[in-house]
Length: 125
Image 1 (cartoon, rainbow, N blue to C red):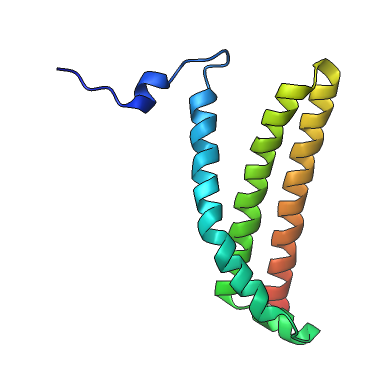
Image 2 (image 1 turned 120 degrees about the vertical axis):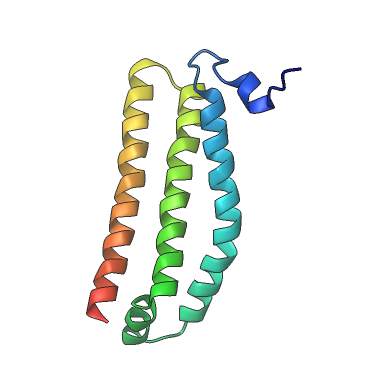
């Protein structure tokens, strides 16, 4: 008797043959965000009300910086993949290409800005 998992049975199906992989990436990032969101809210909540120097020193510590970086990176990658689904569903031809390029540039730009800001706080504080 041969046992095939549901994932193995679904692989390679669909027009692009990558839908299952995309679904799993979205599922994994959604679960990661479900765990990271409360941690991120606690980190940001602890920083509310601190003076500028206090915020820089707070995010210069490893735990707040790592949680914030993970939240931003995972969240924006989830955003990029999610907007790709919407764009593929609702736009055609040139509009689709422009929208995909814009969403990818925007997502990676946010990631770069956030990581740069965290690194600058880490080395300043």
